[in-house]
Image 1 (cartoon, rainbow, N blue to C red):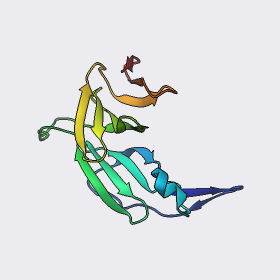
Image 2 (spheres, rainbow, N blue to C red; image 1 turned 135 degrees about the vertical axis):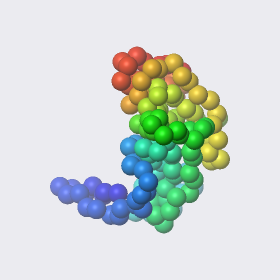
Image 3 (cartoon, rainbow, N blue to C red; image 1 turned 60 degrees about the vertical axis):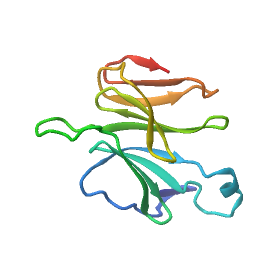
Length: 155
């Protein structure tokens, strides 16, 4: 984590390294409204990370510990099969519906997760290659995903 100051960047802390996988994507979690009112120097407390072993982890940046570990692959990988890579993550809060975590992987699958319990809500398998970018419109009622196959998925 780096803190930006006028004309400088300072290293604040490094998180725990996951030995068996490389971190490929990040999504910051904004503090809840009641936490924003408290005096804090860290605007972001939790961060979501997507890894090269197909996992998604929620990290507490203050304590440096993993709060939730989601294994996205349903089946165990066979020898010679490629790993599922989590290339993109996006967290959204829709006040009437709750929070959703969107993850794009190396097989062109856009997954929607419940970030509280780590359960899969829905998957979209319309893209044919790695999903490298996920965005929302300004009203948060449409999701766009794209990647290596140059197609745009609209949900």
